[in-house]
Length: 143
Image 1: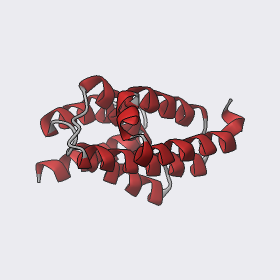
Image 2 (image 1 turned 90 degrees about the vertical axis):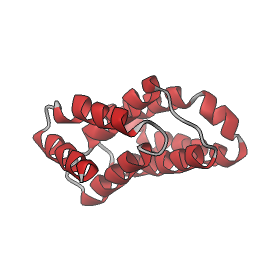
Image 3 (image 1 turned 45 degrees about the vertical axis):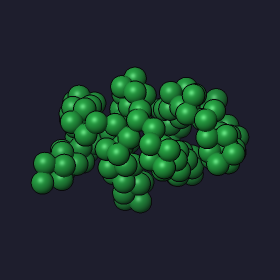
Image 4 (image 1 turned 180 degrees about the vertical axis):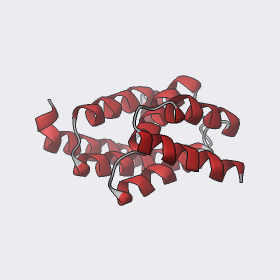
């Protein structure tokens, strides 16, 4: 439930600990983790939960980069879809984290495919602030 965000934060922190000790297992279930995190963020607007999830994503993607793991399309659809949607939050710190994560995705998935997903999920978003942020990201990518 959305009101259980403290338990959700603890869960995300446990996932974060598993990255170092069980990297192979984390890679096997990363699509489930992305979907679970997406669901938690859609149910809640708690900033602490967002920070915990974005920090977890940063550590997970860093582990992907270090192990030369390339994400599959179905994984990136969920991850980039979530990130593009959350670029529209009003918190500048969270926006910066999301943009950093989007740029990290370029290293674990084809850049052109990332660009296409940002257009498909971010530019077509109902939140105009998210659209503007995604357009900024596309402009930075083109530059």
